[in-house]
Each structure stands twice: as C-alpha cells, then as structure tokens.
Length: 228
Length: 221
Image (cartoon, rainbow over all chains, first blue to last red):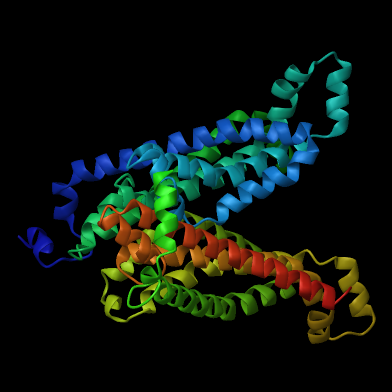
C-alpha cells in the first residue's frame, strides 16, 4: 500500500515507479547505450586516420589539434542546435555532435600512444623486414594500446554524460526521461534516470578497462613478475 | 542555407536584442551566473589544490575527483536541483551545479602544476634558506602558473558551456534563446542562439589565452 503511495506523494525513491516503468527505463537505457557506442566507434574511425595524417605530416599538427580543441569549446546545446539545419531532429544529429566532441580526446591520445613507441623498437622491426603497414598493425598499435584505451575510456564516459543533452531533440536516451519528468517535478523519474546514467558511465569504464587488460596480456605478465 | 540567412536576419533585428528576454538580458544573466560560479569554484579549489600540491599529498583524490566530474551528466545534476526545494532559491541551483563542474579541472591542474615543479629547483630554494611560505610564493607558484592557467581556461569554458544547459531546466542565460526557438519551431532563432553561445565560449577562451600571455610577459622567469 505504501509502495503504491510513493507515486502519489512524489517520493525521491519509489519502488513502484521502477516496477511499473521498467520497460520505459530499459528502452531509454538501450537508446543511451546505442548512441554512445555508435558515437565512440565513429569517433575512433575518424580520429584514427586524422592521427596518422598528423604523424605523417607534422606541419598539420597545429591546425588539426587546434580545430578539434576548438570544437570541444562549443557548448553542447549550441553544438546540437548548430547541426540542426543539416540533420533535422534525428539521432544522426546527436551522434554527429558527440563524434565531434570525442575527436579532441581520441586524436590526442592516439598520437601520444604512437609517439611513445621507442625508436629502437621501430628500427628493430624495420630491420626484421616489417613494412609500413605491418609495422603499424603488429608493432606500433599494440604498444600504443594503453594510451589509446585511456582515450577511449575518457571519450566514452564523457559521451555518456553528454548524450543526455540530446534530449533537446528527443534523442537523449535517459536524458529524455529527465526532461519528461521536469515539468511535473516527478522526483523518482529524475533521480532514477540520473543514477542510471552515472551507473552506465561507471560500468562502461570498468568494461573498457577489462577489454584493455584482455588486449594487452604482456602488460599483465610484466606487472605480476614485478610484484614477485 | 535558409537557416543561416534566417539566423543572420534574426541577429540583425534590433528587437531581438532589447527588452525582457532579449539577447542583452540573457547575456547579462549568462555572464553573471558564470562569473559568480567561477569565482566560488576558484575560492574553493585553488587553495586546496595548491596546498595539497605543496604538501605532495592527495594526488589520488585530485585525479579521482576530476574523473568523476567527467562522468556526471550536467543536465541530470541541474534537473535534480530543479525538482528539489532548491528550485525556489533563484540562481542558487545553477551556480551550485556550475561550481560542481568547475572544481575538478581547477583542482587537478593546481595539484599537477605544483607537483610538476622541478624537485631540484625546490631543493635548491630550500637550501638557500627559504621558508615554506617563501618557497610557495616565489618558486612553486610562478612555476605552476602555466598549468594553473590551463585549468582556469578549461574551467571557465566549461562553466560558460554548462550555463547554457541551465535553460533546459527553465533557468536564465543565453541557452534560453535556443530553447525558446525549439519550443516555437523557429530554426533561425535556434541557430542564432547557438552561434551567440559558441561565440561567447570562444571569446572567453581567447580572452584567457590573451591574459595568460600578458601575465607571462610581465613576469619573465
């Protein structure tokens, strides 16, 4: 009885809300995850060639890094609004904005990772007959992986937070629930959606950390040996 | 193209700038809220960050606070304030949320800036008989300045950007022009508002970079 009443008295925490609206919450979470995953993957697809380009032509470093940093300065509400004439009220609008934001972090981290590969390692691989492509895929990228993954983690976490602003065009995942609940001061919904959003960020960060450990088994061996 | 020319004619219409809800009023609200929040955040974060950096302790705290700041959605925090009793307290919820988001970059950069001061220089200053306070004022602070300014820049830009989102929960500021445009399906107004906000953020960044250069020139090290 008191459980059903929490919807009437507008409590912050309401079990009845979670039970009756679980489908709505799941849909919003899935939309949130979908938008984040697509944005980060597209961000990586764009950032990677950019980083390689900057590395091959150091003269382009200042303009490329400057431009991506400039994009990061644009407030999210303004970014989504500025893209409005090109995409209309669509998920593509939100994803494009988020990809532009992720570029700053991703390009910098990929570059930092590749720059940190020791020159001797590169020389050794060349001496063993590795060509440019094979050198990149089999030597440089694995060694740059920790820095790249650090960038991916940061980009993912901030993308999850920024996705909520996409609710201005109705594609904000959990942000939609927050916006819907605002006019009626529906506390349980605002709190539940906010908490889910933060939880999502924490889970994503831990999952990516796990992926990084799986992808860099040599780092684990080194640390366990170091511990002994 | 229609939206851009529409935005231009919106911006060049004097009536949109004047009066209640006009650009000037929104700009004033935006600058007031951002300014107050930035001052409060600096007053809280800088002494703490510099002190921890001077002592060389609490690095994990600084880094974790900064990472947590990235994970918390601005919109969610503002919304939580707006459905709490704080919503009747005028600018308090917006300023509180902005302070919350400005503290992590300020704190981390202050701490890291102090820690990155060359240990050999610090030891030399100690050897010359400088007290803790002298060391802090004459050696550590000037050397940590570039990092401090980077933190101040990212905090200021973040505050200006976040103040825009305040409009999504019905508070004032330039974001209101955008949300009002959305409510009436007035795309030229939305684009005009977005341009204004983006320009303001870039202007703040440029001003701080300029101030940093001036400061650096006045005090050659």
